[in-house]
Image (cartoon, rainbow, N blue to C red; front, side, top):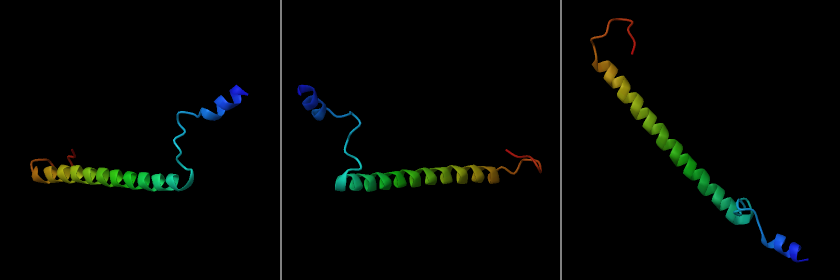
Length: 69
């Protein structure tokens, strides 16, 4: 009987309540919004890097036709 009570009190370390009830839904929405913000920031950074790369390429007129890089 003591084992049964102890098992009821113990829970896995990964059991943080996500997905259970209202708190789980709110946590999921917050996490989704955070992931979206991070993805947008990464996309903007990639766009800035590509723009800078293309701008440097256009500024260098010393390349032979067909030369890439």
